[in-house]
Amino acid sequence: MGTLVDRLSDRLSALDCPFASALHPAADQVQQGTYDWANSHGLLTTMELRQSFADRQYGILMARAYPTAPIDILQLIADWNTWLFLLDDKFDIDMLGMHPTAVQTMITNILTTFRGETRGYNDSTMTAIQDLAQRMHMLTDSEWQTQLLAELSRSFQASLWEAHNRATVTVPSIAEYRTQRPYTGAVYCYLHWIEPAYSCVLPMTLREHEVVQQLIRLTNEIIWLANDLISFEREVAAGDVHNLVYLLHYERGLPLATAMEQVIHEHNNALATFQAYCNQLSFRNNGIDEQLRHYVYGLQRWIRANYDWSQTTIRYQQEKAQAIGDNTTSEK
Image (cartoon, rainbow, N blue to C red):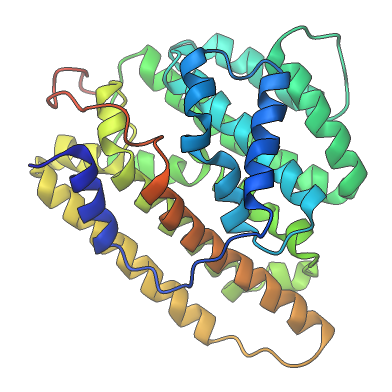
């Protein structure tokens, strides 16, 4: 089957991605800044993590996703993203995600801290959040913050669903997984950052328009389908069943190659539909249309950023997969 990197490269090359690459001119500065921030808050808990941080490129991902953002906003987004990735590792790799009660306690503390209620936490995750919250309150308005926390809460509830599955050794159905997957990756949270990053504010009537809602939904779907392909080996090696490739193999008995081909097909169909919706939009030279143009550009940047970053980060290239069946699971 070739090496892990070769297989990942083959999968990436099969994914359609017509949007041009972009990178913020201060990308290296932001990458170093987010390392310094995470290290100063005690989030880089091992020597290996500190040494490999540059190759994980968490700051570079944000510099690709928001290539024209003001530097203070971009650094805040990069630090927020780094915190969220490291939290995800706590859930998935450090086995916190095996304990629903502990996950629920952490979620409650995180949301409380983001809302500005400090309780003298000594935990590095909480002190980092206090810093993020203070900077968010300085750089964004309260309505935007409320919406972000609502998205974050929904993502955490999906993480709690995963934790219950792990604790009970439950393999979710494909139908149930498709309901939860748009939230487990927190993509809607990242898309919410488009407005401060591009200095655009969509009127509620425009945000709720069917075409805009479909573009947001499809951006999320395109990203999570790509990520399930990209992270497959890493997740199977960790005994994690929350991956569409695995579930197609498990529930429908598809060979892994066939399951991957189906996910690639779904991704490319979703991208074609995204493009069709984009073509329905016509931008005129007025303020509202200019805001929408920036927002759609931000969605396209995110699709491309995820694609480009996945080719260079070591996050998905570190762990070899064991044979399917060595790690999991019982029937639901």
